Amino acid sequence: MNRSTVDGGLKSVWAALELLDCFEAAHELGVSDIARQLGVAKSTAHRLLTTLCARGLVEKNPQSGQYHLGLHLLELGLLVAGRFRLRQAALPLLEELRQRTGCTVHLSVPEGADVLFVERLQSLNGMHLLANVGRRLPAHCTSSGKVMAAFDATLARQRREAGFPVLTSSTIRTPAVWDRVLVETRRRGFAVSRDEMTVGLTSLAAPLRDNAGRARAAISVVGPTREVGDSIERSARLVTEAARKLSRRLCL
Image: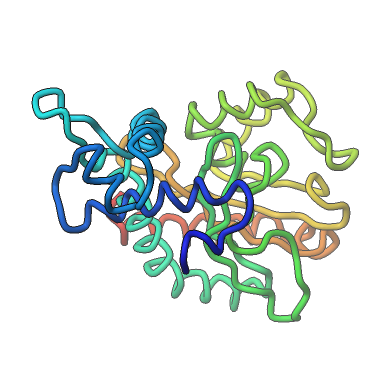
């Protein structure tokens, strides 16, 4: 795609991405080099570099005055690689869990104050329930968010600071209730969200914890409240078992 085909404000984003591509063939580049490759004025190239430097995507060498790719790109790349490895390792266990429970099964990771769903296996009865892959949901209204926040102080704090939007009459609404739920979740080792995201649906989640005890991801099952609600203990045992197996498989 040519940059001129990108409409409106997206042109600047496209230009920034093209700028990053300039470093494929060179470790360091100056403003003039980048302006020439992009076909833009030096002032435009400098503004783009300044913006990318502010986000850590590009860094300036104080000795040479030239620019190179920043460490934040490495962080993002490692994050993608880690999540891909997580997803691939999880799929057999998620399928087994779906077969044993008949429920929709999710794999999720923390993302700011939210939960990001990175894998989903649809329930065997074909019902379309809750999040699609790649969807973000507020941590306080999902069992995955609760269980990860219970074992991740950063997620718990960020959700508290972001607030608690009310989605149903059962949704957590206050910091006091949030803190109380997290204490109970730590005690039980799993979390339940009953009618808190969508009325009529209940989900149950267990964490994938690293050697330091911090939650890095979560596995959850979701189904109609009338079904999942009647088998909480069995579902909790199966989900917790799957999460522990995956944690060991990934050597967390």
